[in-house]
Amino acid sequence: MNIFRRCWCRAFQGAFRLAIPLLPYRRPEQLGDVAELPVRLARRGCGRVLVVTSPSVARMPGTRRLLDALTQEGIGWTLYDRTVPNPTTATVEEALELYLRETCQGIIGIGGGSSLDCAKAVVRAALPHKPLSKLGGVLKVRRPLPPLAAVPTTAGTGSETTIAAVITDAKTRDKYAVSDFPLIPDYAVLDPEMTLSLPPHLTASTGMDALTHAVEAFIGRSTTPDTREDALAAVGLIFANLERAYQNGSDLGARRALLTASFRAGCAFTKSYVGYVHAVAHSLGGAYNVAHGYANAVILPVVLRAYGSAVYPRLARLAQAAGLAGPGADSRTAALAFLDGLDGLKARCGIGNAIPELRPEDIPELARHADREANPLYPVPVLMDAGELEKIGLPRVHTGEYFHEFVTKCGDPAKVLKALDAGGFNLVWTHSLTRRRGTAARCGRWSSPGRTPRAG
Ligand SMILES: [Zn+2]
Image (tube, rainbow, N blue to C red; front, side):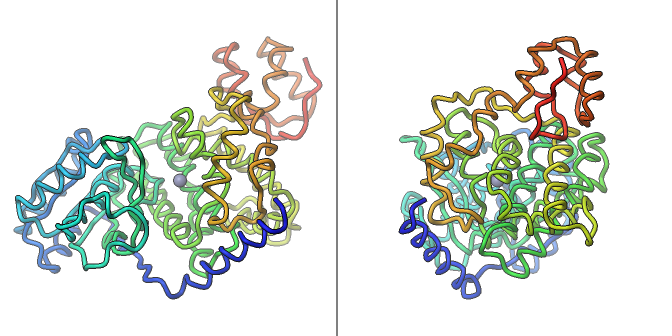
């Protein structure tokens, strides 16, 4: 990136950093069980609430438990169970109409990011004379809003802590963000029972989304003591619990820890932002519909390696938080231990390194898109423009790193394993290798990604 643009980006980020203490961020009150919520709402004078969720979540036992607890507390409820992935203005209008017709005084969103975004957008109820399309942008919601509670059913988006809701225009299909401080929920209900039905692959990818929030917030240049503390805590919790929850979805302790991690990572990135991992992941999501958490998981090590030694001291702190390096280790060793640990965690949770849809010829456009999103807003540790983002190693993401050439040279899984072993490579994931020889090229992983094995 040229010097003028570099100065502009850093000046822009500096102004935002100075403003952090002046802005009305607040931390939602954390509750550990849906049954604790009705008392809080009753104290706020809520006689009836609108519960916003999707049809599948509405059938979950945890949702039923919440509705029963509301009734017991004497709070009436109206269920809107028609949210869709990527909520549209039409969905929001429909929920809002119900809110107004039933004279509700509070809103509970239950679900992944989409239902929570829809619930946040219903705050238009506070401004009945303005169309929703006028609420896009920052700082447009000024009046006090009705109490808003968020009950996440995935441990990843952090939407229960953030100021933003992303809504798609039903007609034009344009996405726009409604962003404002009053949209931060008053209550975040981190009830592990609500995440029990999440299948292993979604547990893994949403957990990697939370990990990416924490890592990007921590290594960026706009951290505060609280966001650093939140990010370190989140990283520690994810390394200690993600594999446990992936292996055994009914491990309530691990589920609870991941919800806490996602919440704390959300608090960290709300103030300290994300970085190029998210910018590239968003461009992949837009171009090929790759799931957000999975895209982040694949891109995270690629971008961290592209940042190089500039981020070693911060990665070293993360390595200690994750229990991957002792306090005495030098920063390079500890940082590399973090990168290896990240590869290992991903592999053990069944997440590969490849997005085969990514076509090498699309890389310049994807990089331009990521550049537009990230610069100058994201306070990244190393600035990169579109040309530099093109060179971070995205062609490897198409093939799944070095494995592709290797497996095609040596097709027999037993031979591959033996050769890796003989070469001193620590193979951390052999799952698809032994299962289906043909697709192993995309998923296998060893822990020395910078070296190409000579075996075969
Ligand atoms: Zn994310």
